[in-house]
Image 1 (cartoon, rainbow, N blue to C red):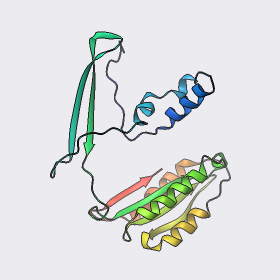
Image 2 (cartoon, rainbow, N blue to C red):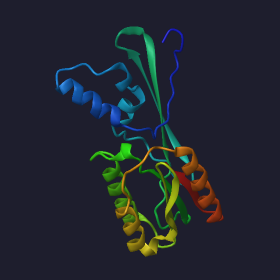
Image 3 (tube, helix red, strand yellow):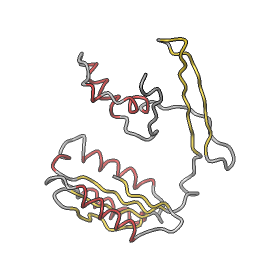
Image 4 (cartoon, rainbow, N blue to C red):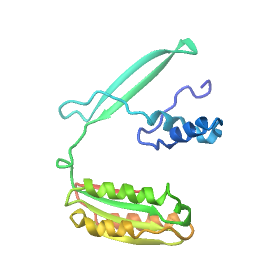
Length: 195
């Protein structure tokens, strides 16, 4: 803190560190230092920030308090809440998922969780949204070409067919994912490659 008194991090990072640290502590063990990721501990909890009004894109919340360990110091928390847009009001989406299906994903808490998340996502898409699935292991491959969400059964069949095997070669997968996203670009829409 003396060298770097300001710390910032994204609000959309993983939250797994909290559960991992809690597991170690519940087992009566100290977690290894690299398992304690402060941004993930903070992002584990839901925060009730003020919603923006009208067409304002975000609202800010500011809190200042004395530090418990040094009352002459101040802690500052700045929270931002973006405007929420309903599924019906948002532009069409072109989503390309880049999924690791290498042998390292062969565990109950890895590829099966990815598949479960993909199934949940399909239920929330609009019929005009598009989904593609690029996989990588030893090589990159196209598990699902860009498919409209109204063909949910095709998307779910591709998800169910994913099997872990091989080594990890993410670079080839990234290139293929961006090629697929570009080929199916939705003008004025949401175009994303999601790892």
